[in-house]
Image (cartoon, rainbow, N blue to C red):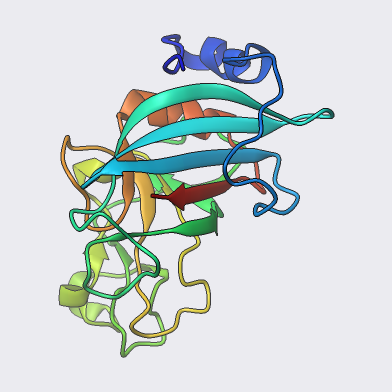
Length: 215
């Protein structure tokens, strides 16, 4: 299948919706597991910490691939059936994409977008009621263990979309799983692609989209 079309800005966003990779309806692997979602980011492992990403949209007659074969990095421990705190594997399953964030300004998305700075954190402290949430605080005043958490002002988070992993925020079941810009290597359990392609997808995403991950 062809790779994501190499276009820029709004032109590419239009291409994602108006010029799919194939005009024929397809039956994607995630089948009926995505509920009423009409936009799906599919991530399928190809071995180790590498995967390929395909992007699908559902229309009146079925699913169509709007982008395909995007090189993708996942966790350094590959994929796992379930997220686990401290274990660098990308969990498999279908997850919501509730909002986006980044150190860069909003690139233009229908998702809620938070521009982050030095005081933005994602709490990974299993012993805190803030576990698996975004927090804003100066390091010395944060009400959670910052050593167990992530400061969000890093290059890999130039643009990112939150993955709804462990929505019940159960201690031990993992925190801080994002779809973000790649640094060219494995992640700590997130999904990462080239930033330019990520921006194109973020511009295309709408509320209700999901990410589906499998080996």
